[in-house]
Structure formats: structure tokens, C-alpha cells
Image (cartoon, rainbow, N blue to C red; front, top):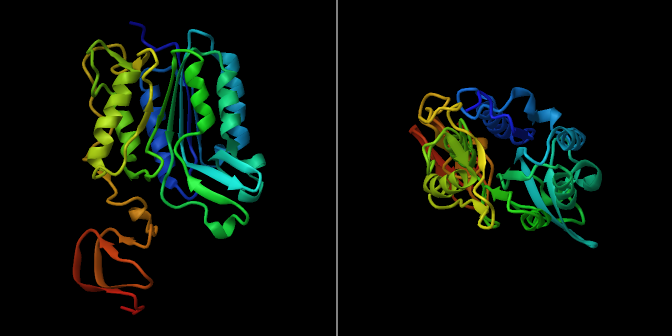
Amino acid sequence: MSTNFDQGHALVVGVGADLPNTVDDAVGIAEILNDPARCAYPPDQVHTLTGEKATRDDIFSTFDTLSQSTNSQSTLLVYFSGHGYQVASSTGKSYYLMPYGYDVNALYQTAISGAEFTERLQAIPAQKLLVLLDCCHAGGIGEAKAPGLQLAKSPLPPEAQRLLTESSGRVLIASSQEDELSYAGKPYSAFTLALTEALCGAGAAKKDGYVRVADLALHARQMVPGRTQDRQHPVLHFEQADNFVLAYYAGGETQPKELPFTGEPEIEPQPGAWRGIEQHGQVNIAGDVSGQVAVGGEGSVIQFGDVSGGQVTIGEKTSS
């Protein structure tokens, strides 16, 4: 085997902003792909865009680069971690991926529509394509910020499914189903953690040194529900695809590698819990709490961690 997985190319995006964990997820995926002891993609073929470097223009520019640097024999992995929305207005419905710096009042100029995303992918000559979308995170755009628009979280651009009809080398995997939220975690989200494990050889059907798309897809489908109390289920679109090789998992060797971090991974108990985001009338309190905690408003309190010597008051504001 070659030292590098020479045909491997990637665009890895972690939007950040109100979702700081998406940067960690993207960096983690990029590091696995670049790692010569694991996926062994050539470093200059992994394009990582995070935070303020993950704007619409930056993403489009990288797509243009990939259209020039890849060929029909290339393998391309596209990973996006951020918000995805189905947006309804008086003119109809559109899907948007929300890059860094999007403006809800100018989505067509600052966000990436499903049609644009699909067109950019179609312009890339690589015949083996895997798209991974870790969207539907807690929090995001509020109705007050989007007058005249109705926004619903959505995991996958409908237009992107057209890619599946183009050839057998097209695979789309989204982190969750339409009516679910994606769980964040440490060091990575539930979905990205499963991807990381698979890229290190976990779940490989053949211990021959290669990660195949079915290995990654099936490992995500098995592991994510178990880590989220059966509340998050990846959406897999690979049934008609060839089970093509995506990467090495051990730098050309056959013995799977350990995960590239120490300690046990953690997944938040509810989407948004670790960032204090209210979801569906519930307030999530995470971490160690001492003294008195007061939560106003309607709904119930879901309490996590160690509460010592204090109390929780619901519906009445008090001070400790």
C-alpha cells in the first residue's frame, strides 16, 4: 500500500459562531483524514474551513479548487457541521446550509441553497463522493429574526438527492432524521464521534486496512441511537451506491488504531443542554450546581450533574 491515500480529497466545514462545538467536530475529522497513521490523506488535499473562514465565499472558492484538483479517479469527502434549514416564504420553499456570517434577511447572498450546493458538487469530476451533514443542532434562528419566513430545521437538502441518480459512486449521510435534533458531545458530537471511530477502523467489515462507505454508514447507524437514548438516527442514502473505498484506517496497515483522544467521550443528555438552550419548553441545567437555582417560565426542569445543598424553584425568580 502507498504511504498516502493519494486519491483522497476533502472539504471539511465547521461553522462555529453560535455552535462552537462544530469547529471541534470539523477539526477532529480533518485531523483523522490528515493523520498518516490513520486515513493518510495528503495534507494539501484536505481543505478545512472553520469559524470566520467558513463563509459562503470561502466554501464556494474551495469547491472551485476541488473542481480543478480532482479527476474521475479521485475520492471526495465533504463534511459540513452547522445549521440546515428548510425556509418557507411567499415565493415557496428553499433549503439552506448556513455558513459563517449568514444574514437571514439576505439568505440568497450569504447562505448556500440546496440547489447551489448540489450544482457545486456536480461540477467536481471525482466519481466517488461522500457527503456528511451534521446539521439540526439545537438553537439557531428565531422567528423574531426572520420576519415573513417560516424556518424548520432540516438535515438534508432535497436537491442533493439528485446526486444519487448520477452514478453508483454517490453517498449522502445526514446526522439525524427530519424531526430530530443532533446531539453535541465531548470531544465530538454523537454523529461525528461515530464517524471518527469508523475512520479509525471500528466496524470495518474487512480488516484489510480500508474504510468503505458502508462501514462508516452502518457504524453511525448502530452507534448514534445508542448514545442518544434512541432519539437521533442518521439518515443513510447509500443503498444504490458501490461500497467504495473511502480511506485507509491505519495508514496502510491492517490493525485498527485507537481513537486519537484520551478519556471517555461524553454526549449531552439533551440537545443544547451544555449550552443552556431551551428546547420545547424545557430548561436544561448541566454541570455541578451548588446553592440555589431558580428557573422562571413555563415547562419543566431537567437537571443533570451534582446538585448539593440547594434547591430548584420552577416558575418563580429568586436569588441565591
